[in-house]
Image 1: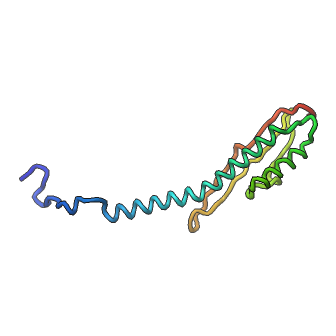
Image 2 (image 1 turned 135 degrees about the horizontal axis):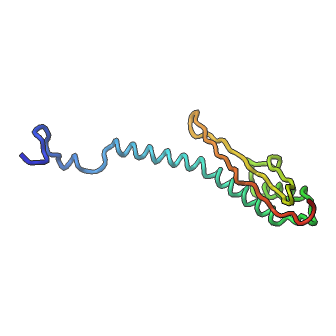
Image 3 (image 1 turned 180 degrees about the vertical axis):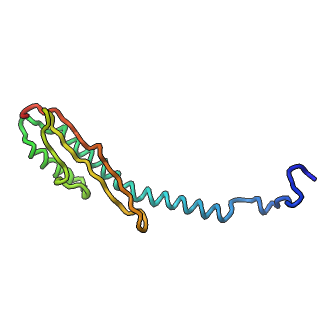
Length: 138
């Protein structure tokens, strides 16, 4: 008797050793489908976050506090959000104020989205606080 075989086992035939089993293939497809579904739910939300961040940074960098009031910055951000078709974040949710010589634009927000059945996902974007040096009024 060979060393690798026990008395109760038969050698595997060539047919049994060939390819993936149906269970392994089904499980792999289920896992791949779940990951694809998760990516398709998360990517649009993350892309919109990148757009909001770009709009806030661009508007804050172009704002001249010596000649323009904060209301102009608010209007500029609102126009950029509308032009970039950002629907989840409105100008009412963005706080713009002066603090110790800085102009602060606080656009932190969170987004809840359905994953499947009764399970929801939540993404929080809390790094959208932009401070720019106020050159004019304080």
